[in-house]
Length: 204
Image (cartoon, rainbow, N blue to C red; front, top):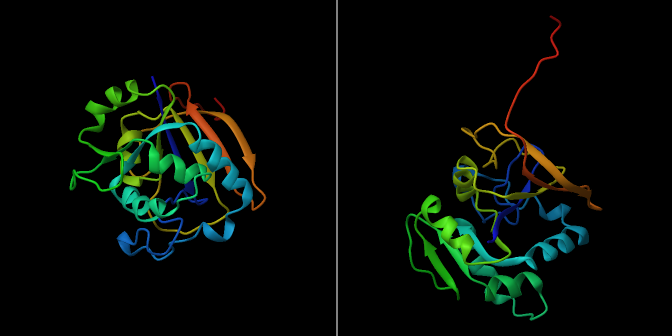
């Protein structure tokens, strides 16, 4: 059975909205699109390429699907690991407003809670989520993500959609690995940890 992994780019204050360009996602009057670009480096590219080589399928939110489908089919380099994976492997889109999609090997998924287990049973390695902020909130809320792969960049924005938004259920995670890229980004891999608990340093 496949694992469900989430890979995303974050600012120091947790914003994941529109990292790659000013027009990716302007909802909420977001004006900082493209914040990641000045900090992209070869290390990030190598890590991302390695992640995509582990994929058997992709689960995407509608906005991320629209961004990807407008760009990656135009990348025809057979040796590009990202384009090769996205253009050839099965893609499933969680959307409430659209159920047909033009990108090859793309299908609609109607109910995340109901259909995800069946989807994971179809593949042996990974079903990968990339970006997809709205979808991520649903997956987090229902504790459906097996592994988080987070790139945190030395940027603070103060506004925008966050990975762990309002209403996130308290949880604890285990750090599996971490490394720093040449531009100062930190790549961290987390899995579910022990049950959430609190403590106290107060003197009795």
